[in-house]
Structures are given as C-alpha cells and as structure tokens.
Image (cartoon, rainbow over all chains, first blue to last red; front, side):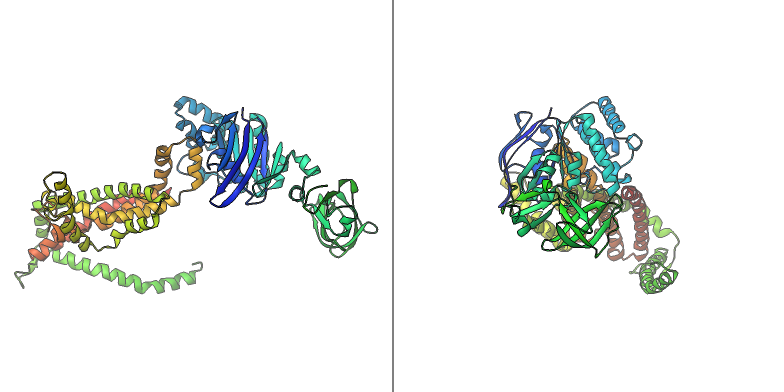
Length: 332
Length: 290
C-alpha cells in the first residue's frame, strides 16, 4: 500500500519560490519518474515527500493520511540518495541493519532480514566489508538494501545513478526496474536523464520551474507532448523545431519533427540542406544537417548510410508525426 | 618526485635545513645528558665531577618526583577529558544555525590567542581570588563560603585554567570535522528512524573519531610541558600539590641551583614523554589507518 497525494503543495526558500502550486496523485505500486532540467524543483519535491523539507503550503497525503507535519521516519518511506549516503564506519551488514536497529527490532529478526536483502541484491559476499571497499554499483546496492529492509510504503530515489559510469548505469537501471516488478511497491524516481525516465517509468512527471508541464506514460509524452518544452525534453536526440514560413505553411507558429520521423534522400525531398556532422553509431547514423532557411536539424538514418560531411541531402518530414505549436509553445 | 635525479637533488636541497634542525635537537640533548652525570651545582662553581647515576638515583627517589608524575598524568588526563568532551559539545552547538553565530564562534576561539601567563593571571586575580574573584562573589551571593581555589584545590585550578586555554583548539578542530560530515548521511539516518541522540552516537561521534585522536595527540604534546600557568599561579604548591615534572625540573635547576639533578630530571622527562608517545602513536595509528 502506498498511494501519495500532493495537494496545492508550495515550497519557497525565503523569497525564492521553488514550487508555486502543485497537485499530483501517485497510485499504489506505480513507478513514477520526476524528470526535468536541473533546478526545476524535482529533488525539492522528492524531499518534501520524504519530509526532509517542510512544505510552505498545501498538504501531503500518504495512504489517505495527512502526513504534512510528520517526521521523515514516521512517514514509512525509504530514500536512496545520489551519493548513497552510506555510513562509512559501519560494515555493509550494519549499514543495512541500521534502520531495523533504530526501530528496536531484536537481533534475530534483523539478521534474517539483512541476509534476505543481501540475497536479493547479491551482497552476501560483501556483508563484512566497509562501504569504502566497494565499487560504485555495490554501494548503490547497499543503499537500496538499506531501503528495502524497512519494507517502506514507497521508495524515493534521488538521482541514484548519476554517480555511476555509463555501462553500470544501464545495468543498475535494469536491476531497479526488476526490483520494482518483484516488490510491486510504489517508487518515485528523480532524474534529469530522459532516457532513464522513458525506460523505467509507468508514469513520467515532467517538471519545469516547479510547475508540472505534463504527466503521462512514456509513450504518451513521446507521441503527444502538450507543449514545446515537453516535446524538446522527451526523446533523444532532441526534436527539431522550425519557425517561419515552413511552419506558417502548416498553420502554426512553430513545427517540431523528431529526427526519426524524417526521411533522408540524396536526390529529392522537401527540404534541401548540407551535412555538417555525421555521427555513425553502427546501429544508427545521426546527421546534423544545415537546412536552407531553417538552420541546423538532426535526422536519424540507417547505420550504414555512406554520407559524410559536406554532402547535399534532402529531408522529408512525415506529416502525420509532425507536431505543431502556437506562439506560446502550446501544442495545436 | 619521479626520477632518481630529482630525488637526489631534493635531498641536497633539504640537507641544510635537516642538519640545522638535527643540531638544534642533538646539542642541547647531548649537553643535558652530559650534565646529568656530573655533580654540577651553581652554588659550588668549579667543583664539577663525574658522579655516574647518582643524580638519577636522587631524582627518582625524591618523594616530589612521585607527586610530580601523578600530577602530570592528572593534569594531562583531566585537561584532555574536559577539552574533548567540552569541545565536542561546543562544536555541536556552534554547528547549529542561530543568531549571532559568527560572533559566538569568534569569541569561543579567543582564549587560544591569549598567552598562558596572561590567562593564568586573569584566572588567579579576577576569577579565583578568594576576596576579589568572581567565583568568590558568586559563592557569597548564594550564601556559601568562598573557595580559595589556588590554596585548596591547586591542581584542579591549574587543570581548569589549562582546559580553558585548550578548549578553543579542540572546539575548532572538532567543528571543522563536524562540518565535513555529509549532510545526506544525516538525512539518511533521519529517514532510517534515528532520533537526534542516536544520530549523534551512531553517525556524528564515529565521524569525529579521527579528529578526536588528532586533538589528543597534539594536546598531549603541549600538556606534558605545562609550566607558565603553574609558575604564575601556585608556584607548584602548596607543597608539591600542583608540581608537575616540568616544574620540578625548573625548581631543581633555578631554585635549588642543582644543574646536574635537573638535567637528570630532564632526561627522565624525555623518556616518559617517549613512553607516552609510543602508546599514543599506536592508538592513533589504529584510528587513522581506517
């Protein structure tokens, strides 16, 4: 059980308003990702839910109970921090056992739970090491272990993968997703990486300057972004935006087209341009094309396209997958 | 210093400084060692003669030596206890945000800048004096007889004065250590259900362990040679109640003019200091290795 409801939540640090007014409903068992550029208030929002910061206004409901004024420990949530926040002077075993010890559990029960968690997370061989002797991924797992032994109503992850290298990040992403399927507990995950958001979330909350821009499933956001910000933030490489007469022709202030929704040709097409940079990734090729009258655009093509710098190409957008925006950036 | 060449030239460059320091240490030590085997009294000039270990025998069997040894250990131990515990609590307080924290921090650190003789005089005449002292006034204002601190509890008085001087040092070191504690660790402990006291015991104190060993090491070095505070306040008395080894050596050399005996005492003090150092380094080595 772990549904969380935020009602008119406001947060200000002195005069600086971080979250003006926010409503959000998180269902039991959901994997919710807060995503947004740095400084958008996503970590603050998570800390408000955790109780590490006090709200300036509004209410936080956890399982239908008003938790606004409750201490972090009594909210029944567990948090995994960006820097893991392991206790350096304690062994892995003691780190995982710490919340149980604080809860006053007896030694036998603690031992069972710690060993169970270590089993789930492949930490059994490391129980007597100190955090300083572990690799980044192992430390991350200890931090998760410390969270799961408490059997919380919800897990809060604050950019947990940003200190790991790229390969490990992908592996841990899978592990966390798998853990979610295993435990079926509510998880709230904060990241600035839209790939993590797209791959892990049941529901993505896109934030900008403390305001929710859009809430929806990953594919919802990808297919029908509500505004130009969401359109540009979700999807990699970024959506191309064109203003001016190309947009006016389609009755819009600006149009957006994703790199994967354009076809590339060397002899015929709608928009002529010159290739500036081509990135060959093997599976795909990303071409950065200087389109006449529209500026730089990115287009995705097959892995074995023999096009390099300086080649003249033609781009044709897929009209059905074109996004149109008005002057305020709202989708039409 | 990577190559053999740079290493060799570095040695040549360091040599003058090292040699100077070595001479600075070895010549006084050698002279003291030499004097300690002579019958050398300033009241009997020109009568110096070799006496072997007689000076050592007299020094070690002097009842004042036993008192001085115990007083030295009490002085060092007591001051360490007060400064480490007090310093931790003060650092904990100064780590909290409150109005005027900058000023309070500055004032807490101030006693460290006052020279020992001055602070001892201030304590002697303004605080502990049985007639004019602040403590006496406080005692009288609640109807208690005033305590003549320096006469009735001389060693405790010296410990208080020395602790007052060293508390800022401990506070400063422990405060910086406390500030280096990762904020997320405290928050994690808070999420884990640890209250303020548990957080202090399980998170803050282990984090401070290293800083505390550093404080103990440095303070011990200086506390073994406390002298000015005793000279200014009690002159080692009454009797030998506040005489430590440093003061005993001084009184042998410059009050009784027995240079030979004082030199023997000096050598004994060096040996004792080294024994303490060995214990300390072992303890600290264990603590710093982690």
